[in-house]
Image (cartoon, rainbow, N blue to C red):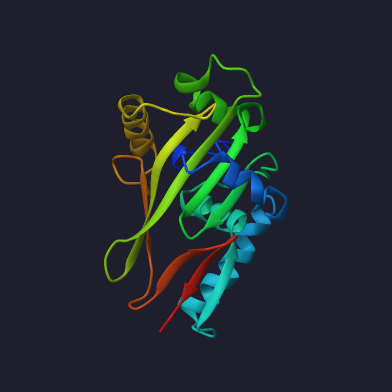
Length: 197
């Protein structure tokens, strides 16, 4: 798999809580990178696998890198042009089209290929419980230049993404993550929180 192939779900390519919300946190959020996968994995293992700790927090950029790894993207490219903002309402990823990896821009081509590289793009992702042992990260919307991509176009595009990434649901909008019974994944300012009873 091409190292820059990044699915729309994580649209850091992978939508419209406000772009301002993402930009307000940009200076405090580390870069999406392969080292973020290592840091996130350490917390997940300590809380959900070995259960050495009852709770832990993972920074937004590290969590996105971890999710990219779960989708099968290896190695994780450094993405300094992508800001990840997390608060209790959701995760917002924002960038400019020109700051996205070339392969990502190619994948997004049908939606944004005609736009200037300085055009902002933002993804809005929500978190839901999906049963006693799973949580679901759901792509709510994708906005380009501050305007939401119409659902008719977005649904069709994401269905194609879902076919190419088996870890996503068929709609291409959802990533299910298994958690232990009683395990909780919640969103807070600048972090994804894991906890056990």
